[in-house]
Amino acid sequence: MRILLAEDDELLGSGIRAGLGQNGFQVDWVRDGVAAERELATGAYQAAVLDLGLPRQDGMDVLRQMRARRNTTPVLVLTARDAVPARIAGLDAGADDYLIKPIDLHELAARLRALVRRAHGQSETRLAAGNVVLDPAAHQVLVDGQPVDLSNREYDLLHALLLNAGRVLSREQLEQRLYEWGSEINSNAVEVHIYHLRRKLGTPLIETVRGVGYRIARDAA
Image (tube, rainbow, N blue to C red; front, side):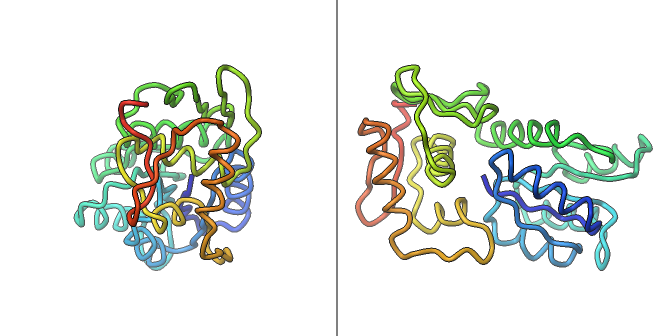
């Protein structure tokens, strides 16, 4: 799951990136509002963690402008502004959730999972299709009730397809969800991950739509 982190505090930002990484997130980190607005415009992120007190452009302005462009990426506001009017202003500007510094990294990860789940219309914490169950909180995949050992890329690929059951995701869309900035991506990387994922799951759950991409049928989910 690829997340944008906009935080100018070096110590806090590095801690959040490391903590979310340990919880299975791919994190791109920017340190000012201009960079945050630019990255959010790409639409490559499943959610964003946005500090309000950013240099060059305030986080509140970033939030208002992205919502004005009808960018629906879920946003969790992270701020030291703990007064109630400030929290209300952030939510009214388009934030989906709010955390006051200092934060607990496990809570942050849980809130992000919930935001992404709701953004895809999922009410259940677990995602299931056929005999396959994916548990984001435990970062675990079960087939017929038995755990399956997947690489992080394979897990993220399956998560993206399950969240978008019924929709075809192109190779480019999947690459955006699987890789952080600066990652070296082989031209057939997604195809290789799909091959290994199918072999490990032992089920024809993932369909190839020739010339378009991959999907999990909605009636299987």
